[in-house]
Structures are given as structure tokens and as C-alpha cells.
Amino acid sequence: MSILIRAVAAYLVLVAVSVGVHFIITPLYHPGGDAPFFAWVVHNWFMAVGMVLALAGSYAAKRSVDADGSADLKRYLEANTVFYAAAVVFLLFFWNWFSALSPNDSADGQFWVVIDTLMPIVMGGTGCRMWRDSAG
Image 1 (cartoon, rainbow, N blue to C red):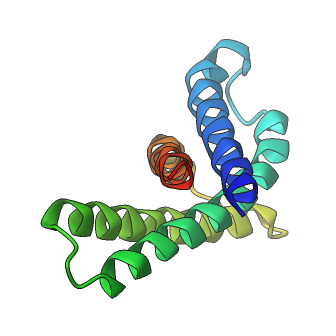
Image 2: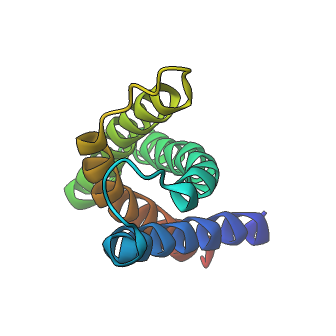
């Protein structure tokens, strides 16, 4: 089971780094205007899988801390903060992504800025915590 958790953790960290880097370099290759963001269209599929895994991983950590009555305040706050942050990014991402996939493409570009800023933090933090916890 430890190998599976580490594989998920590595995937989350990899997606977090790729989203962060891609977000920063997008203005360097995108011509601007109404030109489509083809690289993001492909990237969104990997981000969707990552968001599901991050929400599941953060929920498992939250349940573990909640079940442990002797958990300290730091672990409690960390688990709950990461879970609720993952839930917020999850909802924003899927709402805006499904809007982009709709026939009239009603996605809001400003939400992508918020999503692509928060997602690397949530996924990276969840992935690092999962990697650390799977070690022992």
C-alpha cells in the first residue's frame, strides 16, 4: 500500500509543479487575445485527476486526525485546512472546467488565475504530506 500512496504523492507533486511552471510561462508562448489555450486543454485532464486524488488524500488525512482523539492542534489544523482548501479548489476547478467544456464556453478566465495559483499549493502540500506519511 505504501508504494501506491507514494505513486499518488509523486503524481500530485508532479502535477503541482507542472501547473505552477505552466501558469508562469503561459504569457511567454501565448499570443494573447482570443487565441485558444491548447496546452491548458490537455493539462486540464491531468489536473482533474490530481484534484480528485488531492481531495481524497486530504479527506483521508482529515478522517485520520479526527479519529485520533489525542491529535495535537497542529495536526488538526493542518489536516482541516488542507482538506477545506482542496474542496474549494476542487469545486472551482470543476465548475470552471465544465463551463469551458460546454458548447458556449462560459468559463471565466479570472477563475483560472485563482485556480492555477491555489492548485499547486494544495496538490503539492497534499502530495508531500502523503509521501511523508507513507514513509512511516
